[in-house]
Amino acid sequence: MSRKYFEEEVIQQTLDYNYAQHSDADKFNIAYGIDKNFLFGCGVSIASVLLANPEKALAFHVFTDFFDSEDQQRFEALAKQYATQIVVYLIDCERLKSLPSTKNWTYATYFRFIIADYFSDKTDRVLYLDADIACKGSIQELIELNFAENEIAAVVAEGELEWWTKRSVSLATPGLVSGYFNAGFILINIPLWTAENISKKAIEMLKDPEVVQRITHLDQDVLNILLVNKARFVDKKFNTQFSLNYELKDSVINPVDAETVFVHYIGPTKPWHSWGAYPVSQYFLQAKSNSPWSHCALLNPVTSHQLRYAAKHMFNQKHYTSGINYYIAYFKRKLLE
Image (cartoon, rainbow, N blue to C red; front, side, top):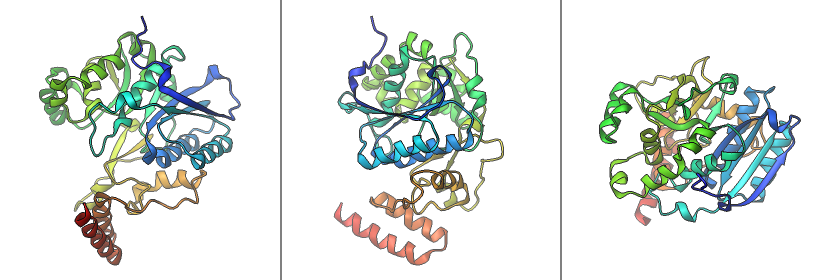
């Protein structure tokens, strides 16, 4: 009996942009699961990994439900530019749309389960990354990482003991006091993930009303429950989280340092937003300028949520006229909602 929850029929189309000069046997696989709103970020994220790791044999896999002709041109140009392989998979999302979602987490968050199932008989490990991650260092340590016998994944802890304790109580999982991880970075041990039926168990939990009542971070909570005592915690340099909205606080501590490998821009304001112009955005912007997106403008606010944040950031950056204009646009938009 198959241990996959998602068979390959969910993949409607595959586009393989292969300009790599290395053999398939040598490559390290990196995967993203995104909707149309994160294609810009994803392309630049891939560019950042390639910029920081020029000699590595890498292959990138993008699982998405939207990919137009402009996206095709840019992703193929990116593969050509860096002599790498980028494979795009168009996904049928119908089976995912009944699962819980929020304003910040759409059904695309569940693509990581399709990713793990897709690779179940193809390779022994895949690095899953959120598309709002920029790379600024070597990933050689991850390429060389050897899993212990019971380790299903390598992850990075989020927060400290107080947060872990709260999650352990909320999720009725005492083992989480030893660490709760952010699911934006997961190095998946594919054979053990498959043997333990993680994708199937996770989807079943997400369909259970009692579980859904307890969770606040959707599949991240579920994965923490399923992988308790079965994941290896690696250094925070592999998932250094920072929200650009922290810049609105009176004092800001930037956790990114010389050792950081992945900068994870959590929160609703992203470095591809026109109002996210801060020094910490440089890792994204540097990769953008060395990619087919180099001439693309940063995105302006569209929703009322974005307009409100744009106004706050413009005032914070002392661009007062823009801030006032965004607040006016925000209030007009709210009247129409």
